[in-house]
Length: 290
Image (cartoon, rainbow, N blue to C red; front, top):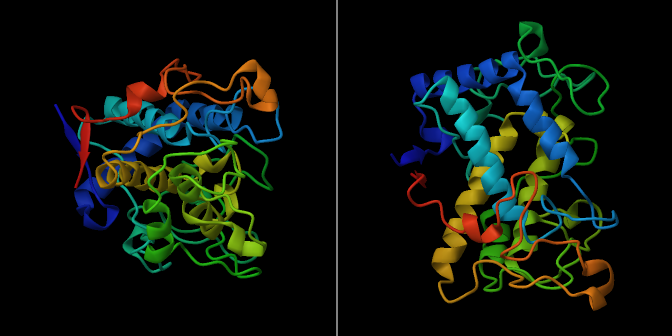
């Protein structure tokens, strides 16, 4: 049965409660922290040797689509009615948005130590203890807009800049690719200061705290950000039906130096599941967006 991922702004109070309760139950059972560890393990940067599948690579979008699906299936084993909502950060751009209410994600971190004090993931509740990744404490941290170095959420125009690019990705297939939809959406640029962060990356920077770096899954808003990124890949494919939905088609050969063996081509397996990008070009028959 096809289920629906909804905009978080349109969730009912019951849907919010069931989603949060399923998150808390996964955390209680230790399953949530396994997802944090998976993301940390596969957060491989350009300069690192070996295969990159999660970030700074063409498989950024299909890898996270499968990651979301695995997480959603875990949630649905707790409550079959639950799906991951998405956060349209071009619209809900304020710390006062309903997303940050006490019934969903909770609010910002306090100034002294960035500790989140409100909502279901506040450390004081005893149900959301940070166990994975390096941090100053075992509490969830946020730092909306990073007031010490202010940054704003992506605008509709900044997103449109990415969506206009008709080519999925381009060499050298990493964070330095100046053209291609994937990197424009993922958000690595050669800019200076906060101008270097675009779209997906800019959202992580704006939330701050645990959303910075490989352990960003510690903040449950990670999933809402990536559900929107997943939706955007759908919209991009619909807008560019004549474009290849994923590139490269073939892996860089042995003569391509550091590119050889560093990225997953369309028909190559992505760890840890062994799924191929080609297997994840469509989610029809599994879920839809509303």
